[in-house]
Image (cartoon, rainbow, N blue to C red; front, side):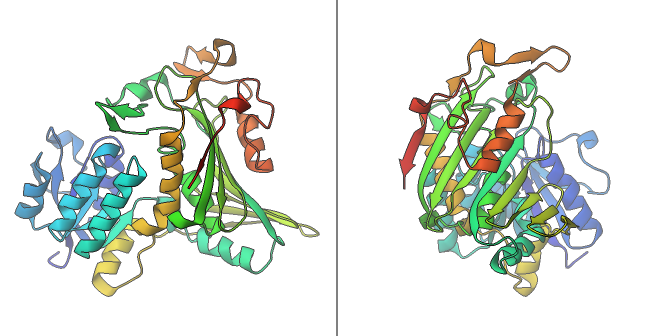
Length: 385
């Protein structure tokens, strides 16, 4: 185990539990060693997966990095804390896996990315879908003309979250908290992968690639941020990218990204690494792909120089979308007639939203353009970048 890379995990509850399990998987392979956990309240023995030993625990992130000799930090903490924690690690020469979204505003993202670049440490942003081997495979299909000329990219996420989801943490469902940006909306957090993956397939990954962003942000839940929203990104590639999302689906389903060509389409269910190629004059072809774990990729980068898959710079376009959502008017509450509460699940649903999400990805149109009775075209906000 002496060659195992020592790791500190900041934020080990909530989504952090996934990271604990993943670190344990890599520890079993002898690749990493969990040296420390940074949490405000230490994890109990019952919260720590078996086989991880007795990592040091502390609420002081910087001190923990020093005392453990960590070489890598995984940061899975509330969105507004990302930049400061990332810079704390970087200034100590500790390499990073930073959970998405990388920051709540474009200014905070730039402060993080520029500060990390100055230190020379490696940083990977946790868009796990971009580790899918389907992404380069689809790019190859597009480049080879499998579906003809590319006309645009759609993304669809129809998910469900109970009302308790917004009570899980003080920042949940907030646009800002104590005067600080949070921007915890459907497109910026739970379904952020749909946005990032659609942009990546379009080749629009850097901030300079985004020329304008139109947003329609709405909410059925009694929250500050959006739970039903769509966005259209104009870009240097001159192909519209439209992503529609809801956390109020009637029948929640797997999110996907669809590449439209003038002679076919490619659908990518990014959580399943599953791809469907449909083209004129041929039967449908379905494929499943492997996936490179982003923490494993980061460690390989440190050991043998393997290219990082998701550097901060290739999340610049995504952060331009986050910034447009941040600058947009606060999400409009849907009229009471537009949603209903499912008592058994204690969650709010918007009747008809599943079809609208799919139609937006299919036609590259916004909710208001599709005639959603509750989407007011006058509220569509456009930010030129």
